[in-house]
Amino acid sequence: MNHRILFVEDDAELAELVGSFLRSFEFTVEVLPDGSSLIEAVRNNPPSLVLLDIMLPGKDGLTLCREIREFWTGPVILLTSLNSDMNQILGFEIGATDYVVKTTPPSVLLARIRAHLRKTASGTPLVSSPVPAADRSTLNFGQLLVDLRNRTASYRGEALGLSTGDFDLLWALASHAGDILSRDHLLKVLRGIEYDGMDRSIDVAISRLRKKLDDDPHEPRKIKTIRHKGYLFATDIWWQE
Image (tube, rainbow, N blue to C red; front, side):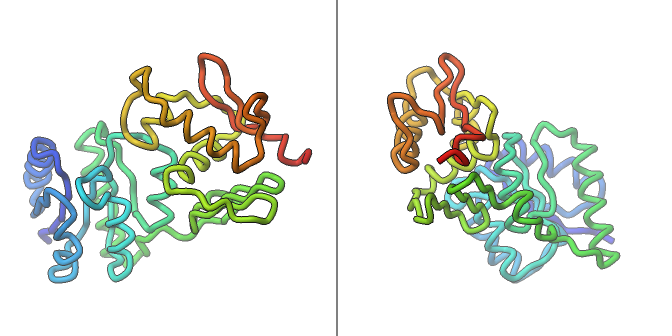
C-alpha cells in the first residue's frame, strides 16, 4: 500500500531531505510550508499520517495538532529541534501520537512511521490515552495547584490569572521542582532561543510570578535565585505556610 504523508515544515531544505528519503521507500509525501492549509487538506483528503513541525510561522504545531484532533484520529508525529520535556507533555496531552527530535536519524524516523502505520492497519488506537493527572497534567504543592490540561493555576484557592508565557514558565519551573534551571535552558524551552547575556525577559517574568505567589522579592523562598546558575522552584516551603 502506498501511504500518503502530510509533512508540515517551513525549512525547505529539511523538508526536501526528509521528503526525498521517505519517497525512496515508496511513501507519497506532500509538503506544506506552514499550517494555513493543513486543516482543509486533512478534511478533504485524509492522509495516512501527519508529520508536523512544532515551530512554524503563524499557528504552531501544537495548536494545529489540537485542531486536527477535533475531527481526525490518525497518527500525528510532532517534529522539533528542541528536546523539551514541556513540549512533549503538551504534545501528548493534546493527542500527538509521537514526538521526534530533528536530530533523530532518518532510519529511526522511518521505523517510527512504519510502526504507527502498522497500528493504524491493526485498528490499535493511535491517540495517546489520557495519563493520570497526578503523573503529568496536575502539580500540587500545598496551596499551589498547577493544571496543565486546562492551563490554569491557583494559589490559596484563588486563580492566578497568568498570561500564556507566565503559565509556561511556572509549569517549566514547577515540573522540575528541586532542580536549578538556567536562563539559557528556560529561554530555549519557552521561546526556542539562546540566552545572549542581555535578555531579561525571564527575570521579569520570575518577578511577576513571585509577586502572585507572595514570595519575598528580597529573600525569595519559593522561586529561589541561585547565583550564576539560574532559578530553583522549592519543593518543601509550600506545605509550611
